[in-house]
Image (cartoon, rainbow, N blue to C red):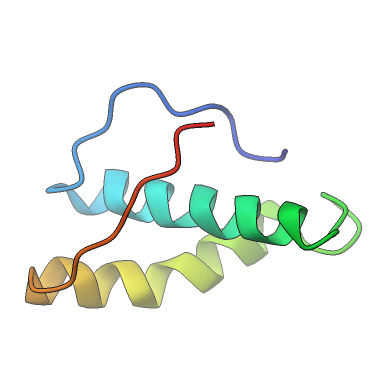
Amino acid sequence: MLLKRIGETDPSTLEDLILIMARNIEKSLIDGGAIPGKDYTMNNLYSWAMPFAVEVFKSKCITYTASNF
């Protein structure tokens, strides 16, 4: 895992929401067989998470689950 384990988060804040989304993306990649640092970077995770997190943050209408692993 490239991203550290998440402690307490507040998904009502954009920075925590982005982190939650990036962790969920990383978990999905690893579950699919990706190798951290080879198949993706930390920059990739944040780049992929940012647009989705911003839309969720703006709309407040979408539900999501934060992975605690």
